[in-house]
Length: 204
Image (cartoon, rainbow, N blue to C red):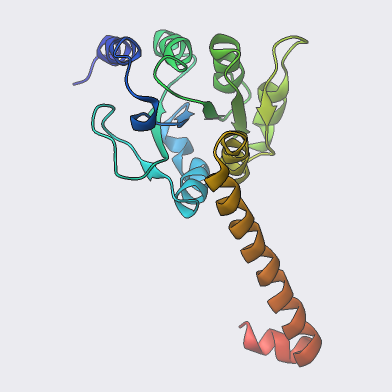
């Protein structure tokens, strides 16, 4: 059985490794419980669609230039792990963190934002009742947040942040946006040309 202290030690060891930033994850995805994974899966989908690979071994990077990692980090049950993750994030090579949590006390995103500052943290309220907790930060302690359940958008925002320094990510975002526009155009054309009855028949 893995001990939390082992994970904490691993994070600190990685921070001290002085690894080449091109071999470390740019994006970190953390969530308060594995029960949040279904909601947070949108972030994984978006990053993969934009050419990111999941990095499961800090010292053995995938061939993809851009990567992400993920952990379960509970603000209430493992505060030491949350603190270590936020404290070491920049030294481990992360450029942005996506943090999701549910319930009325969804403290992981905003606590991580405070600890990791000035590294940007994008909060994902896993449920509607989590929104107020995630966005309820005082002046001087910022967090970026998306609407409840919108982890896909959180990942797009993370890549937008990275794209300021990596032109190839601008191209990928442009291509993704163009595909969305084309989908709308196709649907619009079908609805107009087929009429509502033909459109419904085609899409049943």
